[in-house]
Each structure stands twice: as C-alpha cells, then as structure tokens.
Image 1 (cartoon, rainbow, N blue to C red):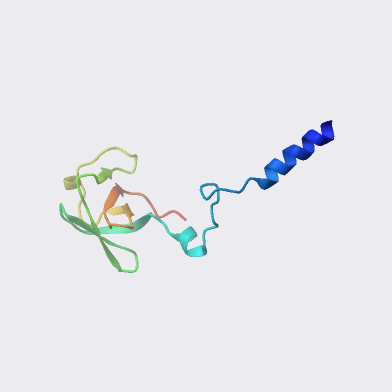
Image 2: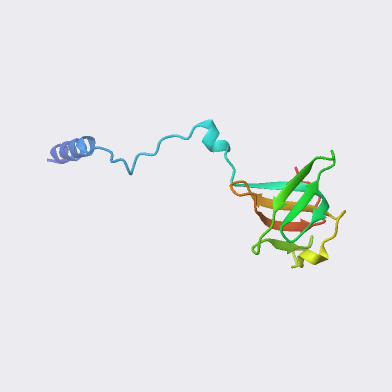
Length: 113
C-alpha cells in the first residue's frame, strides 16, 4: 500500500508543469554587472544649487546634478547644509546611474578599496 501511495505522489509531481512565474532565467554577465548607484571620490571643484563638480586625483572632473533630496553629511554622518561645503573640500558623492542625481555628498571620507 505504501509503495502505491509513493508511486501516485511521484507521478503527480512529475506531471505538474512549471509555470512561467516559477521559472527565472539566469542573468547574463551584462545584467549582473549593471549597477544602480556609483561613488565618486575627489575634491569639490565647483558647487552650485543645481550641480556639483568633483575633481579626482588625476584631474578628471565629473559633474553630478543635485536636487532637493540630496543629503549633505560630515565624515561623522551629521547633517550639513550645502552652503557649508566649499570648493577644495575632499568628498565622496553617491549618485544614481540612471539619472545622474546625487543622493549623498559626504565630506572628509578617504577613498576605500
């Protein structure tokens, strides 16, 4: 009797198709490496209410847009106003790749590997 029950159970399990919702294809390399956020390290070359320009140690500059949601923080994670940050200050900027908008500008954080 037990063998009969196991046989029916296995036949039901094998005959049930996998639905499309249960199937998840493997991601290719391009999808795995897609990042939604990036960090930029360097000193402030220019800061306006609309944008921040960061210059890295090689002299390359990156312009990142600011908006009302951008947070400004000290190295100890205390809040700052954008007007308290001045050109020449070493910062790291976290921004969204999709729209180039800054999420966080934090002062005095050394580049970490």
